Length: 210
Image (tube, rainbow, N blue to C red; front, side, top):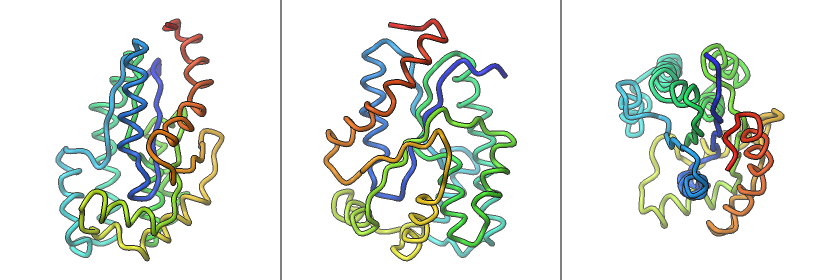
C-alpha cells in the first residue's frame, strides 16, 4: 500500500488528556481544510469489545491471550480504518496505538521491544507519536475526579507506574514528549508546535497545501 496520508498516534498513561488533545487538533486541521479521521484503540470491533470486557476482570485471560486480543484488534483496525484512510491521503489521529500495547503488556511481563516488532510487521509506523506525560497521581486524579470514573483493571496506580516507566524508556525519532500537566489549551499549544513542521513537510510533498 502506498501511504499518502499522515498518521499521528497519541500515547500516554490514562488521564493524560489524549482524547481531548485529539479533538482539539482534529478541529484545527479540519478548519484548515484537511480530511481528518479520528479513531481509538481498543476499537469497537469484535476484538476491541472483548478487550473492554477485561477492564472489569483482567484475570479472565492469560497474558498471552490478552496480547493476542490487542494484536487481532489492531490488525482489524489497520485493515478497516487506518490503511484505507492513509491510502486516500487523509490525516489519521489515533487515541492509542501499539506503543500503548508495548507499555501496558510490558507492565504485565512481555518484552516491550518484541511487542513493538510484532506490531510493525503489519501496522504502519506513525509519522509522529505525541507522548503526553504526567505524574501517575495526576492521571488517576483526572480519571476519578474529573471523568468521574472508577479505575479499571488497567488503571491501578501500581500498574500505571510500571506503564509510565516503559513509556519513558521508549525511543524513536518520531516520538515527541509533551508535558501533559497543564490545562487543555496550554497542552494543545505544545502539540501544535510539535506537529507544525511535520504538517508543512507533508503538505509540500503530497501537494495538498492550503
